Image (cartoon, rainbow, N blue to C red; front, side):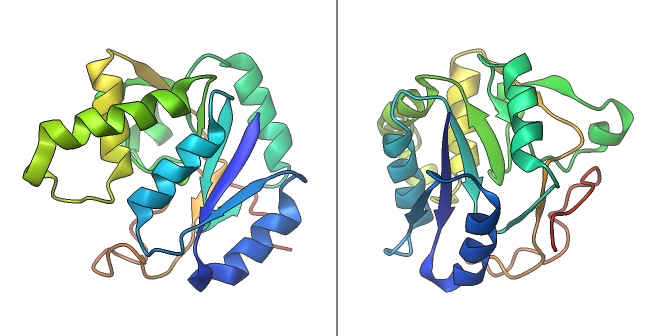
Length: 192
């Protein structure tokens, strides 16, 4: 399984944190164009046909992150897996399948073999379908939800979340809350 972290020059401290905790061979894809969608599409191309764990740089990992990730992927190798969630059902229901149209948040997710390229190819169709109606051109979680919906797919939400979204101002949209984008199930932060 490839591991790809989408990052940008403004977040060098986040990059250092993740590099010290992720395995050798982790690929850091840096957005030098200030275009999050371009960086996302680039990461899908780099993943190629391989199964891939996709991460954003503004996260805190749980302790024993890779061990926990591998255990879940071993149980669901052919499923899309979401490792960060902020839904009420996370507390009430726990881990579960959810309809693909409800996919959201890109902090940490797994795509099985072939899926990264399939989503990359779907992007061209998605842009043509939505045209000027795309309200958030950096909404790659919306792209993914539309792809999953179009293909009648479900995805696995793993609880507890294995990453936490960091506090701070979004580089994509400064109007987003600094605190409202956190998982209620995240435990054991690896911050030492």
